[in-house]
Length: 337
Ligand SMILES: [Zn+2]
Ligand SMILES: [Zn+2]
Image 1: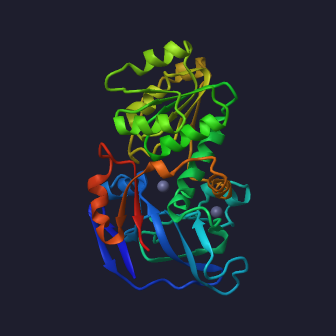
Image 2 (image 1 turned 90 degrees about the vertical axis):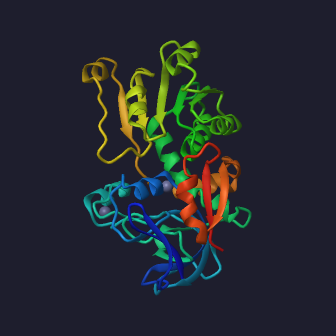
């Protein structure tokens, strides 16, 4: 089969390799669409620990092409999406209901082979059927949407809240939609790229701010003098992560959602965090949220079609990192079938 393999940071090649076979409890999937994630870019530039060589990609959909012994709920021809995180279900974290913190976590496209390929295998327990009216491209958003659902849940948004989202990439746009659906009275989005600000407005932002031309704090305080109830940092930018602490109100909640460099450091003032009783949360992966992501797409409660800026074939995968982060780039979708 054809696959986009990352041999080491900066060295990605589309090559032929042997297709995997499903073991006991595993499902073989013919991949149709796979979205490009900020994590893929971090892997490419070397900012994210991984096991090389690895087939990149983890946001995908496809069709069941075969099943291993013991698979009960799926059969060839089923249209599916996948939670790409393989967990052990034996460690203490798995057994306390925190599977995303599994001590033996293997994530597709990071520790085990991913989905920018013609085929992959995953345990049946990670595979979710998608309804006929949800396209493969839409279903490829289930993983990032499930991560956004987890982040929005952690944030504890209350009806009427003011929410600030910093960064309107794919994740920022999904968080914006979910925050509005969670009842936020205002979802203010700060984003330096004009194309992305337009998308944020299409996706339910009540107001957008260009941080290169406007003072984010001043604009925010015009609508909410005391600051936002919840601030999402959705860019993985260390400066924004530090700034978020001073944009949230006293007693508010900062969610560091973006994936920052693994050796990054942010300076915060513990006295202020204590005095203002701030909550700062990380948000990692998508525990128990994939089925709900499928439901939201099935019922059209979240819009993803307008987030795809480019569609490319697997052979052209090396183009991905030239387009990534560009002024007219949002979600890049790799079409494999
Ligand atoms: Zn992702
Ligand atoms: Zn575990």
